Length: 455
Length: 111
Image (cartoon, rainbow over all chains, first blue to last red; front, side, top):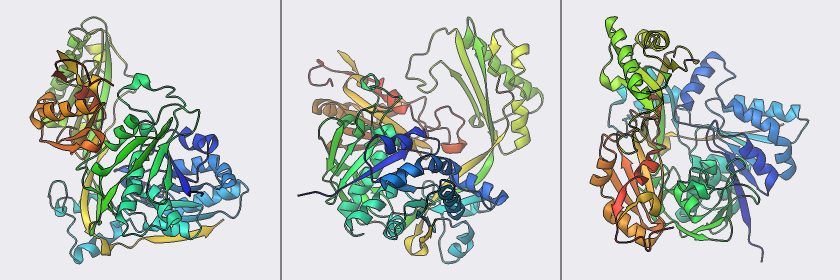
């Protein structure tokens, strides 16, 4: 008896991940679906800004470049692509993808958008019906930031992706969806899982959580790193899902890295809050019910997963402008480098103070890279170092004050202790701080929309 | 004898708002029992005293022999607000593995 298995690979862990992930996944072994994650918390705010300047902008343009490279092979092999590349302008992304289809001389390619996540233009309407957007982490009131908000998007679940696939889409372009929804969508589409079959939805969600950061479940970032071979050609993850919700995490043969109990466990722990209540739009997953067993070389079977009824809410990710920041650095070489770096930092603050520019301690940063910065108070601090990177920064409401700070770093090269260099980046410029504001909204306020075009 | 947690466990960390999450998993059942006993929230908070300025929460995941810690206020504001090199707590997992614990022998702990 043939057991139906669908193979879903994730080729992009975040916007900026290696383009070789998806390219190699298509080349090096069988897959049915390729998912690509292009979102980070602050991405939408950047997208809104781009769109306000150019109505055809506001999506992940990297996705279009990737499509140019992989679409012929994906079409030939019948691999469907699901990407959270739509940003705040999924329609423009669809049109750009359609152009790629035509430029490549392909035809009969169906492209879908899944939207409804962008609620920036609906804020007043939603407040009028009682949504308060209170910060779910801090309890702070929305009125504190309302006038500074530059983006507001709901995390959608898998339903829109399922509909797009049901309508025959070869490429699905989403706005903001949860990372696990990208892989849960095709599972529901293929197996006809019901939206109240919470154990299966939970299984698909766990699978999505494991692969959402690409190679982080195939040996990358494993703390016992000497065991991992060939980071250069590391295999990206492939889920082999069965209709009953059991699945195997694997990677293609002859690729680097490893899939092991440890590599999968590592990623199960990643960005975990309360493991018994991992909340998504579709299901609440109990990660303490996840069972792992080895299923041969580079294969781990995952089973027994239990889920609970989804909550009546969706999460909203809003962003707002909250001042400016600048960080610069200098390299200090030669004997007594750490001591000299401390003098450099002190000098910068004193010169700014002379000009009446001071910052509260909490808005200042001084790091001596090379002297236990990331593991302050834990790792050994070298008693003496012959080379230190001074990393120094500030944040402030006032852009001019942040720029003034930026002017006092490079002068240390000629007006401080000896051996100061590495200022090639020049003066650090003030950049806007985009802060993140999480809240909840009742599900009935949000309706996703699916739109399909053929090219 | 003293043993480093890196010999008996592995870890992964990432950001959770202005805090980080640090997951640590033991290679063996005996190692997990030791982690559960040794890694109290107080001890973890003290270990990260130069990094974590908020509360520490602790969750158990016995199915994968893991503990999950949330280190509140450990990212200098988190996300785009942070000035820190490790604004996402990516290295906090390795940081926990530096901790040393007292054991009678290495038997039953090592990978």
